[in-house]
Image (cartoon, rainbow, N blue to C red; front, side, top):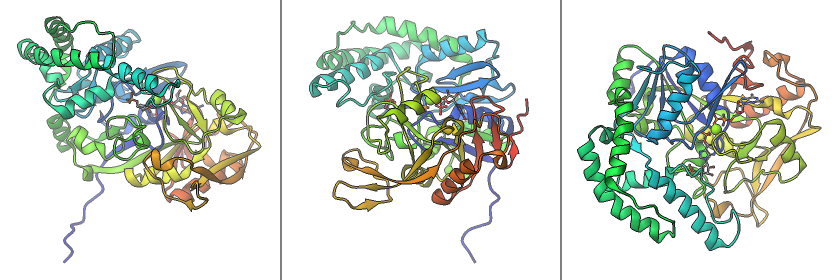
Length: 451
Ligand code: GDP
Ligand code: IMO
Ligand code: MG
């Protein structure tokens, strides 16, 4: 008899970026939220910027899951996230001012690690030091968001200098830990040549215990919370931040972020085994963008790149930096889909590609020695000198922003999506043709927006 028992597919799902971020995850999570009970962030921190547009209202979410805009859903910040408590409070207040109710619908793991002000100073100081050492603007740096992400995860791995959200709820404990941390951190910042404001343990303990008090109603053991919800028959949607090619293990190292942003980060970052996830939506924008340094084989440094940037409004949600733009890289997307176990693609920003005579899709990389590979190599050094091997497609003129199903798209746009499906080997189930909720359709029908 087979050692495997037949299992029904679990009802829980994940949304993950298949490129270098900003694929439109926020928009897709907001849409899918109507089908789930709980939305869980499992990685990253305030480096993420997820935009949700509802009518003419635009919301930029950084730490709070994108399900927060739908009443009656439980939004969970899992243990794998690094939380800047003051930023989180600002985000809560900003949303409340705009009429979004936040109470029991926001839960934060007591084991999520804390991003402290010194982490942000360390992040910036290291970037500046790397720039100085290389002698060139932008060279040698990772190009981080300076949100303290790397230093906060470093402390988590180092253990003795880490703080978790639960620690903010016990002033005496927090003070004791900060007394150890502050002396060490000052020495490290000075070694990096940062102009250091002295770190005073008591001041920091008072300030962050106060933030902890305000967040107390939301802080809980989210691992039991999610498992209890699933046992009660409630469904969970995992919201990835950053994206697969920025994954610390599987991205374009060292030009990556410091967490496992692929779906492989879900088990560790939420306490839910991977086999509980029945469906993975890989989000892919119809072209490529990246913010910060690192390999980008299909980057367009010409007018075409500028045109994509303008049409796609490709400026960072978190830092406002212009995003680097280029043609769709399916070598990269196919690799990400494999690593993330994507079952379907949601193709976003297809509308941006209207008006080009021709479009290109990268199907291979030519190495410096002229040989060609169709495999992604998640290592910046080893990707050095790669150039794209393209397939060329006919473009289309028509604006797509009012299209409501796949058949309604110009023939050339249908062929473009057809090629993606054939190359990656999974279906494009969702197509997005504008930032608004209603500008989305599902295979051959308009997406049912249940609000
Ligand atoms: P995320 O980080 O993956 O959530 O993506 P961002 O919110 O950082 O960036 C995506 C941007 O594209 C946002 O400004 C969205 O409002 C916008 N957007 C999402 N889908 C579409 C689309 O299909 N067409 C257009 N034109 N804009 C879109
Ligand atoms: P969302 O969730 C785009 C990039 C930064 C930088 C590198 C490391 O909105 O898709 P970090 O501050 O994390 O140490 O920076 O990762 N990066 C993102 N780029 N979208 C994001 O998130 C990103 N999060 C991190 O630009 O190159
Ligand atoms: Mg973003």
